[in-house]
Length: 480
Image 1: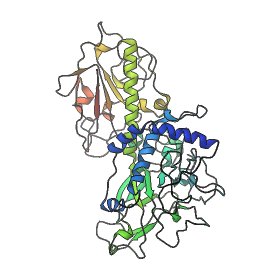
Image 2: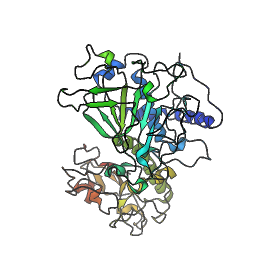
Image 3: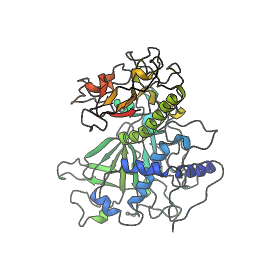
Image 4: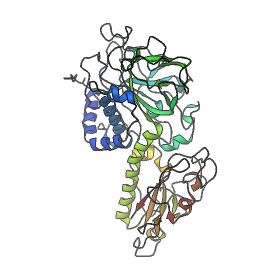
C-alpha cells in the first residue's frame, strides 16, 4: 500500500483543491490519453509487467494534459488567469534542506547549474538557454498515487522534463500550433519559440523527435552503486535516472555516443537529449553495442509539441464552437469573419467578410465572448471560419434557414464551417493551395493556412475527415 503524505498548509492547500478539480475532468483525461496514446516498444511492454510500471507514466501523461487543457479548473481567484496550454505546477525539486514533497513549484524551474536545495526561479526569456524545467512529477498536486517511501527508494514516481515554452508567463502571443511554424532561435520573447524543445532518441541513438514538449521517465529501483536513495540522500536526477553509451560499430542506422537521462548540465545551446532504451535486466545477454558496464532501467514516454497542441486544440475548438453557438442563440445569426483580404489578417469585422480568421471583435454583428485563456494563448490567430451569406447580420430574413456551405459531396449543408488548419507545411511536398512553404504568422492569405484549392475557395469544401498527408492536415467542422 502506498503512503499518501500530508499537504503542508498555505500554498499546498491550493494544490490540494486543484487536485480535486482535476478529478472532475477524468473523462477528458481518458479521451486525451486514447487520442494521444504513446508509441509502445517491446521493451516498454516487457518492463511494464512489474509493479505499477508503465501505468504510472500513462496516468502522469493524462494528468498533465488534462491540467494544461483546463485552465478554468484553477480554484484560487487571487492567482492571475492561466493561458490554455500553460503549466504553472512545475516539477517537484527539493528547495533548501527539505526533500521532495510531491507538490508543484508554482511556475519555477531549475537551471543548468542547479544543485540540490538551490532556490528555483521563473524561466527567464532573456536567458533561455540556461533554463531546465525538470524534477519529480508533482504526484500530490495531481492526486496520483505516491511513493512507498518518502524518498521513493523503489523509483515508483515518474520524473518529468518539459520545455520552458510551456511554463514561461507573459511571453509568446501564440501558445498554439502557430509555434510549430517557426524554429527555435535565441532572442527570448521576441521570437515565436523562445525556448528549445527537447529531443528523444531510440536505443541506438537514432533521432525519434527533435520537437518534444514533455518527457516522462519512471526510474525503477537503483541499478548502480552510485545511486543513493537513503540518508544521506542525493536529490539529483542521477540518483534515479541513468545513461548509457552506444559504442562505435553499432548496427546501422545508429549514432554512437553518450546518452544520459540525468544530464541536465548539458552545455547551453546544445540539444537536451533523452534515450528510450531497453532495461539492462531485460536483455540476456546485453546488446553488444552498449559500452560496459551497462546498468539502465529507465522507462520513458514523451509528448511531442504536435501532440501537446493537438490536445490543447481540442479544448480551444470546443470553446470556439460554444462561443459561436451562444452568439447565434442571442442574435439569430452568426458573426462575420475576421477581415479578408487584409495583410495580416485581423479579427476585426470592419469589412463584413465571410471567410477569414475566427472573429473576435465586438463589431461583428454582435458581441463574441471567448474565455480569457483562449484569447490569451492566441487562438484567435489560428482558426479559420467561413459563414454563409444568408446567416449574417445583413442577410435577408428569414436568416440561416437555407445554408449553402458543404463539406464534400455530402448532401448536408451548413451555415458555417470552422477550419482547424494544423501546423504550416514548410517543406516539399507543399500544400496544393500554395505550392510553396506556408507562413501563417503575419499572413493575409488563406493559402498559408488551408491546404487545398477547394478549402481556399469554397463554398464546397473538402469532406470532413479527409485523411492527413505530408502536404495536407486541414480539418473541417460544419456548424448548422
